[in-house]
Image 1 (spheres, each protein chain N blue to C red):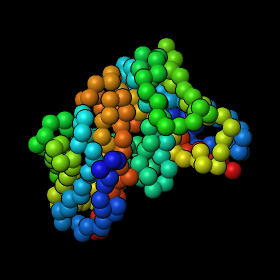
Image 2 (image 1 turned 180 degrees about the horizontal axis):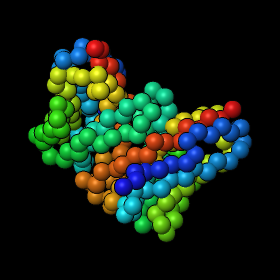
Image 3 (image 1 turned 30 degrees about the vertical axis):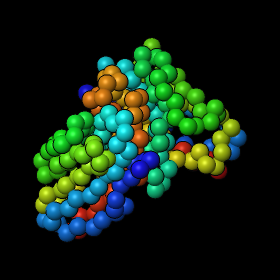
Length: 110
Length: 114
């Protein structure tokens, strides 16, 4: 894989259900992976930064895992709530810059 | 404490014109990065400045330039605007430039070129 890719592009989830989505990235020369949440009309908000293979981070109902050997990260939302509706971006840290995926847009239906 | 601020919020320019976008980082942050976000894509890296020096440049033409001032605020300049420059321009600041230094984003400047 040459670039950061996220799948699916969008998903709809019923309130209370759990969901997860994927970020794939080049595994060579890996430094760090960032996850951001971006709500409409707001600034992207940092969720996690992960550096080590096997890293797991958690913030409330949202958690993320990292596999640097195969080049992927999962983000999980447990018990989705309407306020979780946002675009979730992952970004690979390449020395001085972040290389972003196109994002996964999550819509939580009440 | 104030977050990253950007001005203006929205801007409409005509092809061929020049534009200056401004960014004020979080107090104490020494690094500012600029990103361009086109609908349907993730933000694309344009520049990073640290301690007033350019630390990195993305794959953008020379029409794009930037600078960082002694107070760590930054300007992004785009000359000879093209329709394709229409985008949301995001500024992000960080304390330093280490791997674990989070980049905090501003709300962006929406540039429309007609």
